[in-house]
Length: 354
Image (tube, rainbow, N blue to C red; front, top):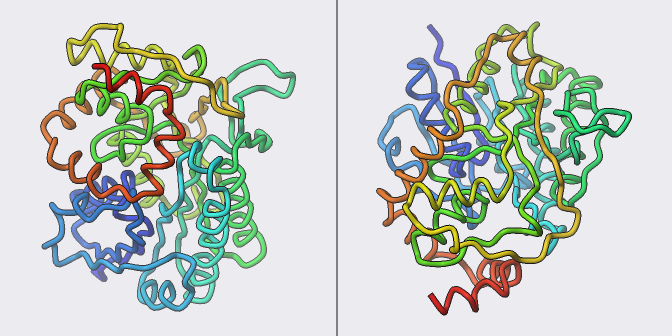
């Protein structure tokens, strides 16, 4: 049997690296080209357990570099496009970087895929493109794939534009695109700027857990293993079931910021007074949840890990991998440190009193 060759952009990031490990365990007849720029959130330590696997080749490169992308993608039959700037707050501070990476970079990958005759192009997007999850009459309910885009941040705008590009390459050029829009994913190896690893990190290092606004903003949460299983079902599905389609990935496990902060503190046996409230961010989505019925009915995928079990696994992992966390924090460049100080100013002063 001919070996399947897959190009994975952003493979050293949180979801990409987890999916690579999941993929290598699931498929023996596979060769992976892992392509990553290794920006602040890309980390080769995330791939340490598979670095000696002969089925893996790593390429350091920028997805906006046409020549490097085309050379690395040549010989592959499938593309899974994870690479992106993903943090909403950073997009408010530096929107230009998000537009370049998420829009121009996606265009570069699609062009290379078109020229090389790629057989499947899975574009990893986000439910943030929908804005607040709501029905046409304005009532709140989980987003479905046919809902209009109402992005509320530069990050969400950049991903919405990338989605449009990807879909146009299917309709106009026949590139076999599949678009996935995930809810909030969490688990091991997640960079500690996102909500749950930020809470866990602050708790472990004796800091206050910062809560935006009143802490009532709601998200739908999915554990990384369930997310990877959903992507795998799309990767191996017959083309007529998935190509040219958009699939939400979510669990319906809805929780607000305050609930998550208390859950982290409870698991670490810390008092609830370790929470502090900070100003809300501009354009903060109030309610974000994905209806994944289409994926469940079409491919039979179901989430298996509830939030409490997933969070317990996640907290345990960060406790057991302090060296990974310390390496990540130690290599932050000045721009990341300045950004974090800007976002949680007012928290740092409190932290110093602990």
